[in-house]
Image (cartoon, rainbow, N blue to C red; front, side, top):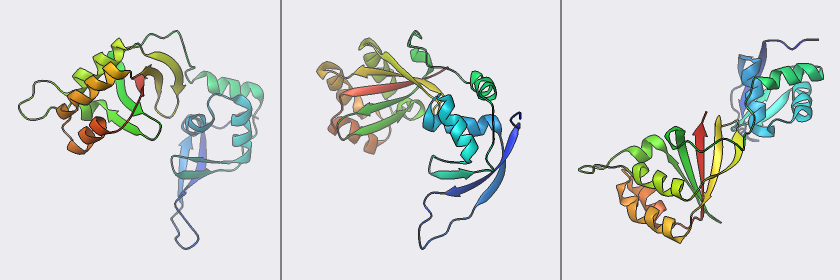
Length: 197
């Protein structure tokens, strides 16, 4: 039996607890959109995707999605997944399409969106992004994976002492003082760079 083009889905918050109740929304989702949510959790694993479609439930981004289980043939799943990109380790890093940088350490995660990091402080000619991205690009980002949740290729680079010093020194360029304080004070040694295709 062929898969439908759209699925009626019940969506509820995973924040609902024993005492509190949250409303359940009923929506018709295109099948491709539902599969994209599944891919964000599973990656391109046909067997797992087949099982989740058949079972009719998944938790993604803090919400539970439920639908009447779908039966599908292997070729149906393969056709469905062919429309989504694959990881491509041969892709070169494209700084102009980088949309987010996540600085990571043992107990630290600092997310820097391009728009926020490009914002200039008053009387400044350059934004933090203009200093950070060239420093990270020079450190040699290495391809790691494709993120279906972010619709982006993820590159990783080591933030050595020299790069870390530069990122901390230039943090005052950030328009948001709380974010600048995190970049200056917290420990991080790796940067994940998200590049849209």
